[in-house]
Image 1 (cartoon, rainbow, N blue to C red):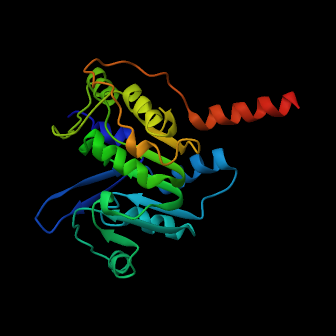
Image 2: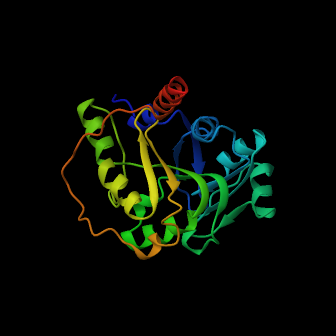
Length: 239
């Protein structure tokens, strides 16, 4: 039996179910790993966390257990099996609504997992405009590079056919066009974005003119945390 690519890509996964009978496995980056990324670039741990596509609130609860004030949105209804999950909704920490209808997000750290690939470029630009006031935005979703990697290594990858899947370099260019400094951490399979203060407020009016490409192109393997540590050491030596 082929290995599941997502079990290699993501360190954490858990089962979910919906009222309509749908069942599946949710794959994600653990909050502790996202905090490591945030701390490496900001020198401190985040105090607030926002999850775009929060599902049943599992990640929000993980963040709160680490002492981080957490909130999020989810457009679909999920079965909430624990009282903790139900309390997230009662307390307004988990809102059931599309991200497009959400108020501008204010958080130190935000996460989008498997959300942006279901949007067209106009919806993407509107969604990204919600993160003007976020310090660091971490994004994970399927890319052409993932599909190539899975095929090369003969892994099973049950991605959705209706996803807007593009190469990593397309996403980097799109994020930069729409007002973000963007990096890709190929060890953790995620994009790390920082709002470009000079462009904040403009990107919702700028939609990438770049045409989607079906050509798969590789992206250099970069461990962002190690790269950032290397840069800091270099600066210290130059002083």
